[in-house]
Image 1 (cartoon, rainbow, N blue to C red):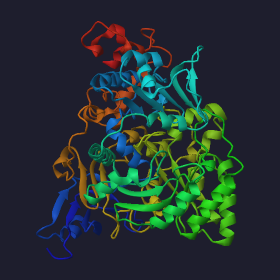
Image 2 (image 1 turned 60 degrees about the horizontal axis):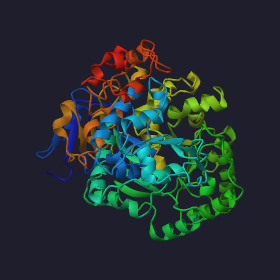
Image 3 (image 1 turned 90 degrees about the horizontal axis):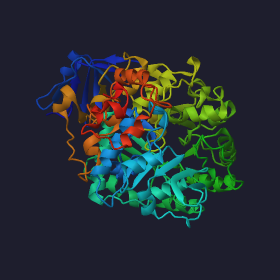
Image 4 (image 1 turned 120 degrees about the vertical axis):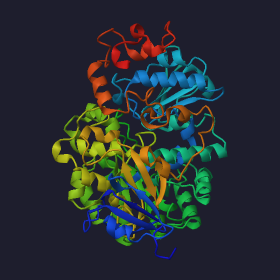
Length: 631
């Protein structure tokens, strides 16, 4: 094979390239992980050599690979195989059935963990399970259930495992809810930050190293299944560098990374932030690594005094008076070392104070050109957007409002929620902006939920919070997940489009993204996912092309073995039945009025799941379990 012969050609497709000078194509050629030709079948197939692999896309639509601007894949991967994911599950009854079965399958002293990625509003019942219901299905196995970053539910066995008793003092920034006798009931509240939730979860058993490697591979494959080909990892609480990065480093060494990963370094301890960044800027070189795993700067936490946690059930927290001085110390270190940074900021009050610091530093040492940016920015003002533009910064938005929109409206009103964050306005003002998820805890890792949220203005609970004037068209939303993200990883011109010279990352969705009904966008998956020309995921008629077989999830009792991931796809006729099909979900939601109780039988389905019914087949027992929409 000559030096110019393509390694692989994908042909007979309908490519949306996002390259304005060549918006569509039917074939692409890949050499050494990059696109070397984009055009018609005749043009591209003419380049075929004796060793070129050819893959027929069967006339299907193809898009650039999706690129998440903010997620927690490194932390999420270490624990993915331990977690029962309720992401995308559309009924609490189904979720509780999953919990009950996983409890039966989990050996002592292991826990069953549901760690974020869902909201009570996604369930047709519009509520969380009660502690009584959780204790009924899990009397002896510890259960830890994290809902967003506002609360955790622990059954009695979990309270015993973590050692919370009448004598346990109240933690700073959180609340252990107690009964009238002072005993913990199993409810932990973030007030106003999630430290108590992090700390309690950290008490659970961890996987050994080889299991963590397997777990991270399964998480990356789940992302590939959804069309994700790249992420920027935003660090995370209790994620220690370099210790917690050894697994991803091993996967990089073994050539087993299937999601390109740029990582930001997140400070580790309050009051020691300056020392962290002084040390890291000496030991870590910006951009060190390769096209699959490399350093991307600092953040999302730079200093703890600047972290305004995003629990919209709680009043907006005011940052302490020392915020500016502490932030300035760290930003000066970063600027001196030409490190970009990202800063978690939910509220404009925090953003405007941080901008005071950035402007002060900028007057002495310019920061434009450093690709620095704010994360989240739900309530950012027009003035702050303009100040960011003047300093050459960006804004990375995530779909947290798709999970918390109802709480935001409850606290601040529908009018205030109409542009949270004001994505359309940021785009119109020419500020760099892109999209992501902030998975795996405060939102799900599913990119299609984010795309749906930007196009429809609806939460996962179906509430329409954005008016038409603040919505994006489908192509603009897709650019938010592809070419726009490249600036945030300092890779403009290298990725994000199907274009000669760009990384050969592409996906073939299971349905045409541009043609499915708007309300079906969040149900999309990928049938073919390609990273650097390699097929990292294939399903259906493309399954035979899959170059990325992954061994079964470890340990053998892992929830991943039975339920898969998002919407319990591993059981399409079981736990996933009500969640994988949009028509099925709409029928279920219309038929069932479980916000308070079942209209037919006058009780809540989740309570019925937890009860001891005299039937060998729970789903078949009509009388106890409610209306026929569960059949």
